[in-house]
Image 1: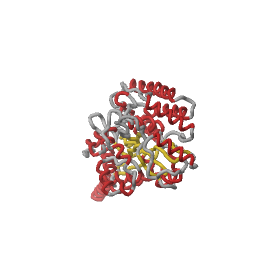
Image 2: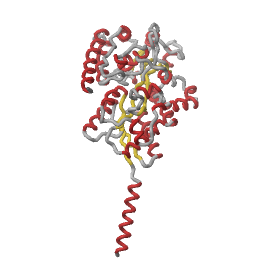
Image 3: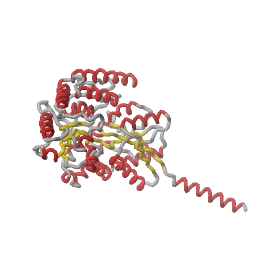
Image 4: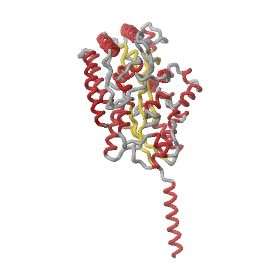
Length: 436
């Protein structure tokens, strides 16, 4: 009887041990990818889970970039933060300042015994998400940059060369007028107005967007957008809006619909827009470099990255951090990163993925898809490294509101830039005080 009980006990213990050994570590991943991009994320996660049965990454869509970041912060405060949070690039300074709330990626991977090498990434990408001593704070993932798209069919109909997109802003205006004359509802529009027309515009023309090296030099940075070149550009956009050449389509990526639907013949937008165009556009489109003002010395310089990176919250178990590290290295593997780049239009975040894509002949078969990388693969300057300011999402809200008033004629460009600067600087001062 005793033997029977002992055997039963040992059997139960053995079963429990086996169950424990086979336990799966769940990893929660909140993201802002929807539509075709969301489908790609789900496919990548499913492939990782299949190849790594000890882990179960659960990808959960949480809304727009703003909504996802706010949801993650609220969850952390409530004590139930996800393991991984996708945060758009304008939230970088805020996340970096959240000491104790996040686990730096470099530190996490080293503790997990599987270091992630920051040097494996494109310089412009790694530099933005790293500390000044080169340590990765977050994981580069869907890095994008602004590029210029144009409707080749519409160009041909308007008597324009479909293989010769405009290179300067003056040419954009001239081509936009011809597109309108040929019956297009609008000539040109832009997504992410403040991000492209102020932040990227400044870097592309090698002028500062903010002091303190655009915020990389310290929390004392203040806006520098009230300058003659930006004023000239805002005045032009207002003029072109009045003439019907430029159409304001809203904030964020809402204006994309104007181009995808064929209403607008040209748009400046994220390189990541390509995925939606491939799926939904009923016309041939081209991709080109951003327009610039030809008489500006040093222009064009380089574009800056957009998109988002992946942040890891603090106070998670070693098992979770080991799994997250494994997942991140999977995302950065040449094959996965190259496939993500080729399918979406986001830039290849690693050098190996870029080289693999070239070896596969992707750029030769798909003209224009290398533009985003080429715009980033340039030695940056203090003015073009990127923007790292606290409360940048809120600053963009201010700028977008004033931008709307400028292009609608409700406010002069000068008054708008002065208002952006005054209210933006007030937020920067508030952020500086909060991190002291």
